[in-house]
Image 1 (cartoon, rainbow, N blue to C red):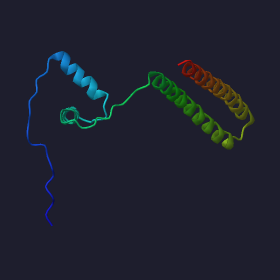
Image 2 (spheres, rainbow, N blue to C red):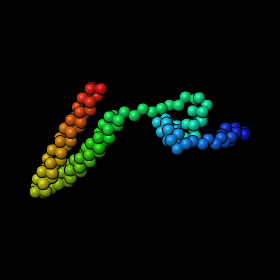
Image 3 (cartoon, rainbow, N blue to C red):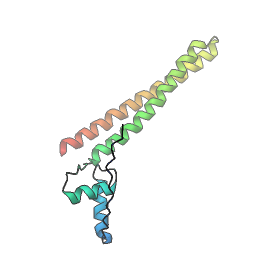
Length: 131
């Protein structure tokens, strides 16, 4: 069987922009979902619909803070897992006591991070209520 010919864009059109016009085109392109500027310009010139993304800065800020807190909580969780594994292998009492002390400090850090998450969530919630 013959493979169907792939439809390719073979005709070329050159367009010249002033620097400020090009900035506008690039800004509009960055706000679209088009993967290439050529696709964006092609759709715009042919009157085809262009999907524009809308970014909510407060949501972006919230997300970046939550990602950072999540990473910190993951690190604390990993430390807890290592601590539990170590506790299962201990056979000397003094070593056991030191691991208990370390576990308690880890628990305190975890509780502190959970409180930070609650505070940040409440702050963002209050900001959204005001809008």
